[in-house]
Structures are given as C-alpha cells and as structure tokens.
Amino acid sequence: MRKTLALTTALLTTTLTTPAWAAAPDAPTDVAVAWVKGFAQVTWQDNGEANVIEKEYVDTGVIFEVRTVAAGAANKAFVDGLPNSDRIRIRVTSRNAEGERSAVATSVVFDARRPNQPRVQDADLLADGSVRLSWTQEPVVDQTPGDPLDLPDEWLKITAYGPDGGAGVDIAVPLGATTFTVPPRPRPTSYRVWAGNTWGHDFNFGRRVEVISAQAGISGVAAQVPYGDSVQIYASPTSSPRTMHYASAVHLQARPTSSAAWKTYGKFSGYSNDDPIQTWIGSLGGRQYRIWLPGLKKINANSIELTPPASSSARSSRTISNLIITRFESSRPKLGQITKLNVRVLPAIAMNAALHQWDGKRWRYIRAVPLKNGAAIVPIKATRRGVTTWRIATPPLKINGLPVLATTSKPFTLTIR
Image 1: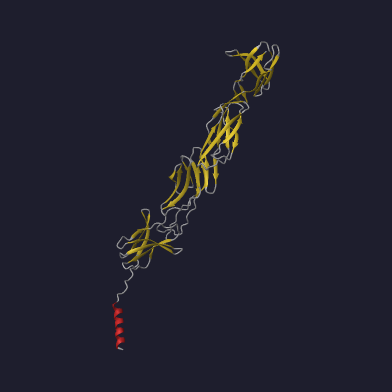
Image 2: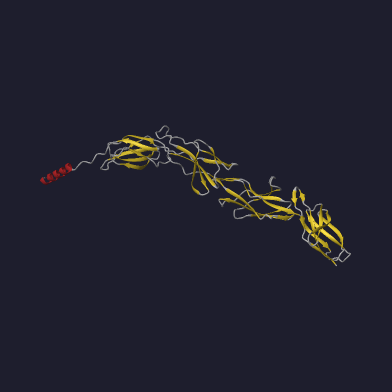
C-alpha cells in the first residue's frame, strides 16, 4: 500500500506541475474591403498579432491563402490575383507567437467579375484606309449588388498590331460603344477589341480583324505589237502576310487614253504570291494596260480579313498595221512581162496604202495601193532591167476608237531580167 500511495502521489505531482497550453488569440473584428487607389484592400482590428489573409470562393467552399501580415504591422493588406468569380469573401485570422490561430473573421461577400469580352461582328475597310469595327458585348450580371467593391475601374480598347508585330498600340474606346472607326495605319495590321477592369481581363479575345497589304505588279508588256497579234502580260499580285491567297478575281484592264475609264477584259483567280499570272490580249489598237485587284472581305470564325483594292502602274502598248504579205509575184519577171504586187494587211479594212521605191538615198512615193478588206493585187509591167527595192506604207488608222499607227513593211525586191 505504501508503494502504491507513493506512485500515485508522484503522478499527481507531475500532472500539477505541467504548464497549461497557450490560449488561442481573439478573432479579428471589423473586417472590411474597399477600393484604395485602384486596388482592393482589406482592413481589420486585432490585438497586434500576426495575421493570415485568405480568399474563399463562397459557392464552392474552396479557400486559398493570399498573404500573411507580421505581428505589430498595420492591419491592412492589398488582395489581388482574384479570379473572375461571382461570390468571394476575405477571411482573416490572428496567429500568436506559439502558432495558435484564432477563429475566422470574414468580410462581406463581393464579386470580382471582369467584363465580358467584346465579340467582333463586322469590319469594313473605308475609302480613306480607316477601318470601322462593330461588336457586341454581353453585360455582366451582378450577383452581389451594392458590395463595397462594386464599380471597379473599367476600360474598353482596340489594340492595333502593325507590320513589325511588337506589343501593339492601344486605342481607347468609350465605354458602352459597339462601333469605332480606327484612322488609317500602315499595313498589314491586326486589330483586337477587348475590355477589362481592375480585376483584370479575359484572354479569350474572339475574332480579330486583319487588314492585308496588297500590291499589283505588271510586266512583259511589249511597247509595239502588230494588229491582231497578242500582247503578252505578266501579272504579279502579292499580299502580306505571304500566306494570304487572293480569293477574288484579278482583273486585267485596258483603256485607250490616260483620261479614259478602265475596262476589264479578263479575270483570273486562284493565284498565290508564288504563282504570277501569264496572260495575253489581242492587240486591236493602242491601249494602256494595268492589273487591278478589287477589295476583298473574308469572314470566318476566328477573323475578318480585309484587303484593300490595289492597282499596278499603267503600261502602254502601241499597235501597228500587220503587213502579212508584201511581195511581187513573180519577183523575177522578164523584161516586158506583167508581175503582180500582192499586199495583205490587218486590220482587214479599206485603206489607201502606198508603194515606195528606194532610190539609193531615200524612199520615194511611186503610187497609191487601194486595199479592199485589207488586200490588193496590183498588176505591174516590168519595164527596166535590174534589181529594185520596194516597201508598202499604210496610213494611221482608228479602229473602234483605238489608234493604229502608220506602218511600213520590210523591204522586198524586184529583179527584172
């Protein structure tokens, strides 16, 4: 019994001398949230302990620590990085030196909703090179009306990304607007319409607007072509970015003078930057030629592509008469025989051509050669032995209002034996 009593007394003595656990600190009070210089700030009252700041998603119960505040520090903290959420509140607990935490004190429930992103519906490239964009923007339904963090600073803007890429240039747009015209900018240019507020912004920008840079090149136009032959033309339409394929037709146009209106004579489609177009057009009179790219608008789910009209420089090609046949038949008659001057010319119309003879110094007019439907066979008597050189000259003409220049044939000979 004595040993038992001694053991019991020892255990009792040990229990009574163990120190008690430290008490948890009092919970903070007066937890409040407010905008301060464009930032969301939480404040509270406590007894000077350290604090733990947390955010709670009310609808799901998920809690994340935001930051800690050292003991003795001011009872305030900025809260950022909040999600695009309808119902959030801030939790504040105090923590003493032993690590004991108080009960939780909470702020009122508030929302951290960002604006819904604008959805571009249409865009047009105007005559002066400016771009008109239009969009819709769904309003945000406030699930916590009247909370202390309502009405955060909001913005709406268009960002233009120029030919060199880079960060882009922001263009402020009035809040509530659903259309805006951006002044002309260097091409190619990409535009995005987007919105945000103090909480941030979504990165789901939706449809972008691409303004393509287009150029039209023309080459291979001969300066002078016989009537009825073909003028060969190379069209080199290009666009930037180079992956762009021009979906609408490329127009070959012509006009009789620099003051006349252009008229389209051919359309070609399906080209890419790496495949220039080679084409031909009949030489039916002197004209100017150009390559014309009409404006193009292409709408798909992710973008609206706008390509401005573009024109090549004008290239001129003159038309001369096409002297198909100019010869004597036979070209070696005997003295006193009759030979025939055979002439056939395009355009096949009535005209007065002329027969010229070379006298060793210059061409001399010998006689008129009337052509009917562009042709004539003229009997000529061989009157003097020897070799003579001749040519046919046609007058300047107008065919359907288009000029055909005065033309001379290559020289041909007559040998009289």
